Image (cartoon, rainbow, N blue to C red; front, side, top):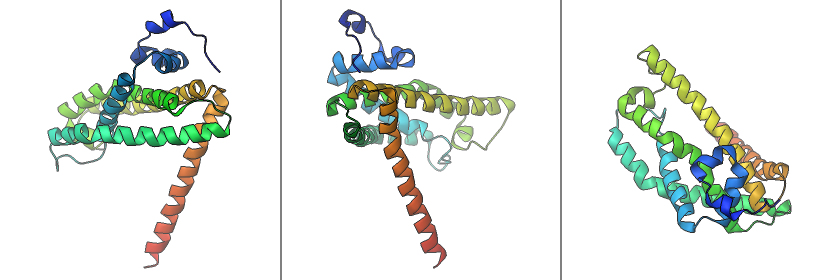
Length: 214
């Protein structure tokens, strides 16, 4: 459904803050008011942020220096952001049409870019953690003190909160862009995700059976 238009109120919205409390209003604002430069900025910065966050627990350190890994994220992150957003937008746009969605490809792309905001928000914390204790950042089983146990626990809790809130933002944004209910938005997101998991599981089982018989 369409939200009431209040251009003066929308003008005052700061997406990095309002997305946490008013995801639908923020999504409508991104569609109606924000320029394409802001959408592109979110996608590029979000790709870098996601790449940095995904380094946690990879055990790449000390085989590679932290500055080298950060540089790799900065160089490859924008391409990862563009690729993931485009794929997600295409799928959400097409599946949403099945449920009667009226959103354009551009509308879906704008609200999908907002999904990076929670990840961008926690990236400074992850960089500080990586810089000050790379052993515990890259190997979550490596514990040196009670302080690091606490940091690891906080990181795990933050990751859960970010994941849940990103999903909420996704549902709200798709509902606004496609102009239908939250439930339709939920299934627009859930169905392709579920099918992808089934396909990955099937390939995993096939891979295991094939190599176990060799």
